[in-house]
Amino acid sequence: MSLLEVRNLAKHFGGNTAVDDISFDLAAGELLALIGPNGAGKSTTFNMVGGQLTASAGSIRFDGRELLGTPSYRIAHMGVGRTFQIAATFASLTVLENVQMALLSHHRKVYSFWRAATHRFRSEALDLLEQVGMHNQASRPCSELAYGDVKRVELAMSLAGQPRLLLMDEPTAGMAPAERNALVALVKSLVVKRNMAVLFTEHSMDVVFAYADRIIVLARGRLIAQGNAEHVRAHPEVQAVYFGT
Ligand code: ADP
Ligand code: MG
Image (tube, rainbow, N blue to C red; front, side, top):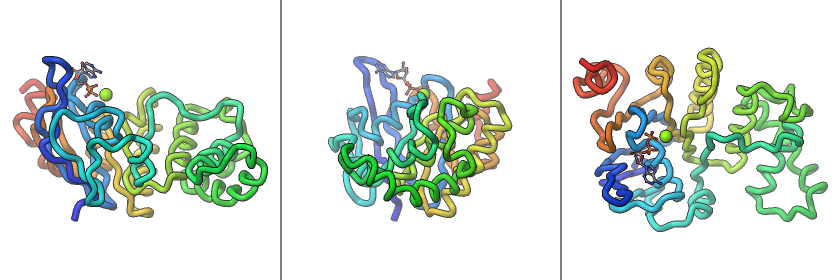
């Protein structure tokens, strides 16, 4: 059974249809790319799965449970994590403290227990930092980090919530090509190691074709193609949208 089952999902904003009757599946251990030109409906889809937006029609089942109508905090606690385009780290805290904060929040500890709790989560936080290759910079304030490294810390913070599904809308926005490759390669390795499902958007076709297990293509809210890189690249409608042929 699929971990995520999206069926006939739609979103209308007034008279404008942002997402038009799309259906797809996502399994544990799978890295699924959602691609398409600006305005295709990618972020709207993410926001419906994450519960930040209410769908106009359709169904979104996660692990057999309906997410439609479920508040976003509850969706998060069911095991659906997400990263945001805007940096979510506390600049004045260290890398380690940021991840400890995320663990604290996941375990719903009160802040008056900050000292005891951070002590408790120290090894867990260091372990997460090791998974994203940031344990050597654990004691540096986030304000001193390179942009690509902040993204790694954010990824470790997302993992603190032990997501079974992680939603990443443009995780590499603002990055140089080499950094993009490295981040998505890291995500791919975590998908395999943790048997996690990841849905992500990415503008670089090279990166998508190199790392995604499967690709979904949206154009003007409609799902025009899905499959592996070879299938999607050769699809006539995709060719038309991307290469104007
Ligand atoms: P993408 O992420 O693929 O670039 P979006 O999902 O952000 O696309 O947008 C899809 C369409 O929905 C666009 O036409 C956009 O203008 C419209 N849209 C997105 N959010 C809103 C909103 N809150 N209100 C009205 N229209 C919106
Ligand atoms: Mg978007």
